Length: 268
Image (tube, rainbow, N blue to C red; front, side, top):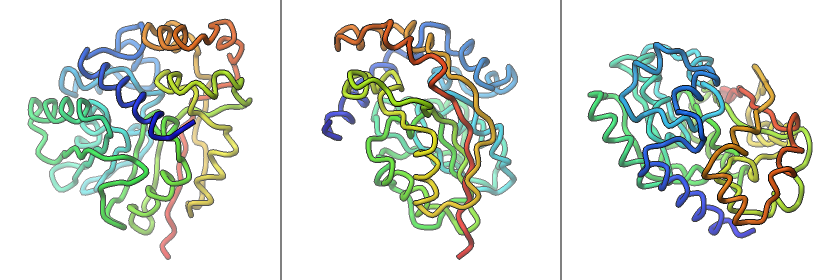
């Protein structure tokens, strides 16, 4: 599959979600987010419209952020994790959100303005070519986004580049215990359903280590409920248009994991 075509489909899918101000899943965004590690207090603390229910975990909850940290969110969407991180790092800290979808950047900036977040900024860019200086951030977070990136090797290398020595990466993502059927793997449209881009768990961890990360460790993992995909109206329409049988997708039940993984950039 051609990377640019994949990016175009993903960008268009998430632009539509941003415009519709809805989750990519059938259940309300807040209800879905609660099942993935967000508390009522956290969801009430962010501007209305920042939570689109697009994640597969809560990376901020396990990132151990502290006052003054500079945090980079890969694939920041409407900004929920950036705003939660902003509360952790305080006025002396700074949050940078990067997203490749202009409509998401616009929505996130509107949310930042509504919430008067002066220490949060959003930049348009791709994870494989981050608009961020070398060795400039303390912590990287990401929420169910790296699985969408076609060139994960490049994405992991870019994350390593922008981290300060001793900086850490803390991401929530989707990985596989079994290879996807070829007809799903080759469907670029199914990327929007967060499934086609997922790779094997061991390959994911190996990719981080190859990029230079040390102490790579899965902090938690859980079966990713495929009903969030098969009951998702957007994903369902995409799969039907791509002639992907829903029963074949359901056969992957138990083979898809939501993980929280950590990696450290060595001091030198």
